[in-house]
Every structure is written in structure tokens, then in C-alpha cells.
Length: 78
Length: 418
Image (cartoon, rainbow over all chains, first blue to last red; front, side, top):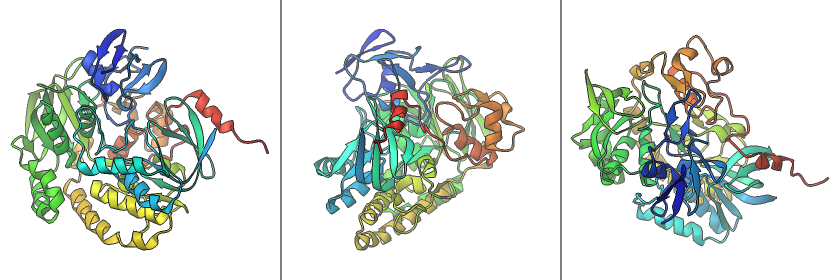
């Protein structure tokens, strides 16, 4: 059961949970803010659309293709 | 650093796994790359809410047991670095990998068409929703509408229901006679019959398509055109996808010819470029059974076992016939080309509206004028949509094929001294 920090808040999830799922488990499900300022959430679920890109431990990653790990810091407003 | 494979396989879905397992007895040094954290592709995606079939688990175990197969997960191809050499990146590093033979098993993505409200959080692809649920997305008690076209809608609805969602509607755009004609053929395909029995789900409506997703900052409901009448349903999630389009970008960048929207292959699954093969959904939509047999043929052909490859041709022909019927039954209604309004965003990366694209006659011209397709996804979503809406042919991709780190791009200069 890894515990991560999602936008500064601690969240414990089941093993094998994707970061995309964690966004909904611990927040409003959104991943990023678009060019015109809309909040967006994962769309394609399979690494194509880039809507789910978040900052994980300082690097830009796709939430739908990243599994939650203990101590991970995920930011959706970076 | 650099790396070498006698046989490099891009994609670890059913086609890529079958290709690696078929080629393994040759003793070739095989490398399988995949951008997901675990093998299985989309159909056999694993996760805390996934239910993997026995065949998928067995193939995964066999892959792990082969000492001449190395797998690199969470790894994307960033660029063609030289003749038979690719630049790849995983979460920690970038490196070059050379190869003698290559098999493209890059799969397919959903055709996502723009409609008012489709950028609202809560709206996903249909297969996208299924993939997200398998990865642990909570849908317990949520009201879900699935829309679009094809058998994936049923699979997505089944996964949502299995995880506690209330599926209010499955809206299939194809008309009743097309769907009924397809369903009548199902007894000829015993393995597929079981998967498709939910065609008779009471919430299934043919001749029905989405008009708009409703809500302010998040999805609150959906408006449907349902067999001649307009209905609105309150819901928490809408999964909407209009079938699959082959992922041909890497193949195109490598110089492999297209046949329609898919990579062109011959009877050996060989592409137009020598030593480069392709198998599975990137050569045309056909389902996992077809992908498995195509992958095996490609793997055998790539290591020179032509007799064993030829022995699989009848099995491939059988599943190809099924795929042909499927694609005919779920052909898209031209009405779906008029869902977007002038202010509906088409390019979600650069927030370019439908109105900003009207007046252009080609993909390249529209890109230069509006930035459509120039964002992070490199036109993978809006390029598929504009190809369907306007008939624009997207150009072959240029590197980097995906957003990449500077350190990775620096590997391109990592050539040994002369």
C-alpha cells in the first residue's frame, strides 16, 4: 500500500494503482490546466493524449502510465 | 550508452508478446519495448481492478521465463537515431538501441471526435474509461454513460459495471440493422460469442449518438440523439470513443508504407521496408485473436522460420474475416462529422477551436495557421479527428515523437569516436 503526496496531501492507495486513478481517489480527478485555463483530466487512459501529464518528483510524467510508489510527490498545478 | 537486439519488438500487447514467444526458440537476442508499466497492451492491461484472462497471465510468465528475451517497460521511442537504431527513454534514462530486425506492434488508439463539452473532466474515451478503471479509478456508485461505436463499448460497460458503476446507457451510433446483422453472425465465432452476449443488454441502444456533454466545471450530464429523439441523462462519467485507429506514427517515421490508415504488410507481416515487420492493430483493427496470430507469424518470419509462419496463415485468414465483418457493421454515420460547434475545441493541447480550423484545406496549412496538432500529443488526437472530419492526411511525425528530456536528446550525440 504505497503512500504518496498529491498536491501536498497524503494519500494511501492499493498496490498497482495508476497515478491517474490516484488523482480521482485523492482529489477532483484533474491533472493539469490547459492553455486557456480549463482544468483537464485523463482522457485516453493509454498514453496517447497527454491530458494526464503531471509533475512527479519534479519530472513531467503521464499519470495513466505511471504506477503509484511510496513517497512519490505528484503535482497537478506545477 | 547503447544496446543491441537481433530482434527488437515495439509493443508488448498480444501481438508483441506472441511475436517474442514465437521467435524465442531461435535463440535470437530479443528486446521488447513498451510504454506501459506492465506488458499486456490495452486489452490485457493489468491493475488493481483488472481481471486478466488465463492466456494473458500464461504468456506473461512464458515471456519472463525466456532468458533471451529482455523487456523494457515504461519505455518510449523518441527518435530514429540512425540506420536501424532508435533513441528510447524510460523514467530514469535515455539510450540508443540498435537492431537487425524490427517488429512494430504499436497497437491502436481510440478515434476521439470533438463534441460540445468533451473537454470537461469526467469525459474520457470509452476504452479510455475501461483502462482507467483497470488502473484503479473508483467508479463505485457512479452513473456512467458509454457512447460511440464498436464492441469496445460493451467491454468498457462490463468493466464499469463489474466495479460497481451504474451503466445508464450504452449508445452505439451504428443502426439497428447493422448491429443485428453482425450479432447474427456471432455463432460462427465461438470464442467471440461469449464476449459479445451483452449486446442484448437492456441499456444498449443502437442508432444513438452523443450530442453534447453537459456541465460547468465537470461533467453533469449528457445529451443524446437516441433513435430520432433527443434525450438528456444526468451522469458522472461519459466514456465516448468511435472505434480504433492504428498507431502508425513510428512505422511512418521509419519509412514503412501505409495501406489506408494502417501499416501495409505482406503475407509474412513484412512492411515495405526490408527487415521491418508489423503485426496487430497497427496493421488494421482485428481484435486480440488476429493480433496474436499476426504477431506469431511476424516473429517466425523475422527469425527465418518460414514454414512455421506459413502454417499459421489459415488461422489468420479466419480472424481477418471476422474483423472485416466487424468493421463493416460499425461503419461511422456521416452525421458524426457535424457534432462540433464553432467554439468546440478540436486540439486539446493547444486549445484550438473548430471555428479556427474552418477555411483551411490541409492539415499542414491548418497547423501553421492555428497551432492545431502542435502540442504535447503531436496531433495524435486531433489529427485522427481532422482526418475523419475533413479528410486531412496527417504528415509523418518528426522527432521527438513524444515529449522527452534534454538528457535523452543528448544521447543522439553519443556516437563512438571514429
